Image 1 (cartoon, one colour):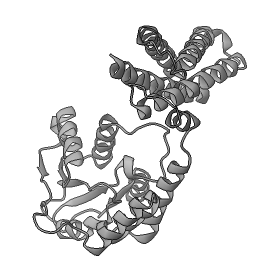
Image 2: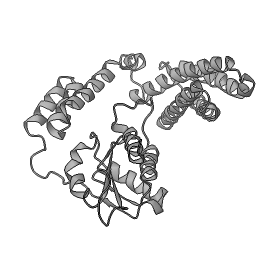
Image 3: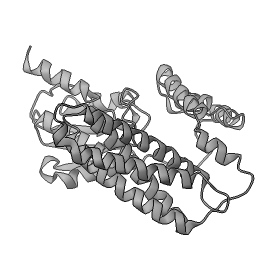
Amino acid sequence: MTTRRHLSLLLGALGLLDEGLAVGLALWTGVAQLVPGMDDGRSWGKVAARLAPRFRVVRLHRRQYRLDIATGSLCTIAQEVDDVLAVAKVIGEPMLVGSATPPGGVVALEAMVASPSTFPGAVIYEPPVAIGPPLGGEALQRVRAAMAAGKAGKAITIFMRDIVGIPPLVARQAGMFVAIKEDAMSYARQLLDTYPRSFNVDAGVLATTIDALSDCAQACGACADDCLSEQDVAELVKCIRLCLDCADVCTATLRVASRQTGYDANVMRPLLGACVAACRSCGDECQRHAGMHEHCRVCAEACRRCEQACDQLLAAIR
C-alpha cells in the first residue's frame, strides 16, 4: 500500500475530507478548515475546490458533531484543539487554519496558541447577520409549530434539512437523537418536576447531579470488583480502595440530594465538597490504569462527570 493511501485512510479515520495534494508552488502549504457546526464539511466543498489548485485543503468534521463518536461525556475545546493538532501532525506541513463560526474560531485560536510554529496564520470571520426577515422563511414557521407541539426531534429535522441544508439522512438522524433523548428523561428529573413544593435550586442542575452520582457510584463499585479479578490485583489496591470510598460518598450524597423536604444547604454543601474530592482522587487513580484496563477508563469518565456535576450544584446553592 502506498504512503499516500496510508495517509488517506488515517485522515478518514480522523473525520476529515482531504482534497489531496496540490500541484504547483504551494505544494507545502496546507489549509485546515474548521467547518461550521451541524455540518460534516461537505457544505464547504465549493470553497475547498477553489483553494485546492494552490493549497492542500483538509476539512475537519468536528468531534462534537460526529454521530459515529459516542464518548459518554461532553466534548471540550481542549479535545477539539487536540484534533486540529493531530491533523497538522499527520499532514506534516505548515498550515493555515480557518473558521467561519465563533466556536470554530475559538478552537482555531487555541490551536495556534498551543502550537504557534505549526500555524503561520489564520482566517477567521463571522458569518453575515440577517437584518431583515428571519432566515428560513416558511420552514422556520414549521420549526416553531413543531416546537409548540412538543416535537423537538421533528423541529431539529426540519431546521437542519430545510434551513441549514444538511443532507436529509443526517438531518433525520439528528432529529431521532433529540427525540430519543427527550423520551429518555431520567426518573430523577421526572420526580423533581412532580415535587409538590418549590425549591431554590434549578431542577435541571439537580437532576443532572443526581444522575451523575448514581452512575458514578455504580461505576466505582463495578470497577473495584473488576480490579479484584485482574491478575495484577496487587498493583490495583489503591484503585480498589478509592473506588469503594468514592462509591460510598456518592451514595450518601445521592440520598441526601434526592430529598427536598426540610432541605438544609448546610448539610448538602459539605457532602458535595466531599464528593468532588472523592471523585477527583478516584478519577485520577483510575486514569493511571486506563491504558491497561478498560473498566478503569470507564470509571474515570464517570468520576469526571460526577465531579463536574457536583461542582456545578455546589456553585448553585452557595
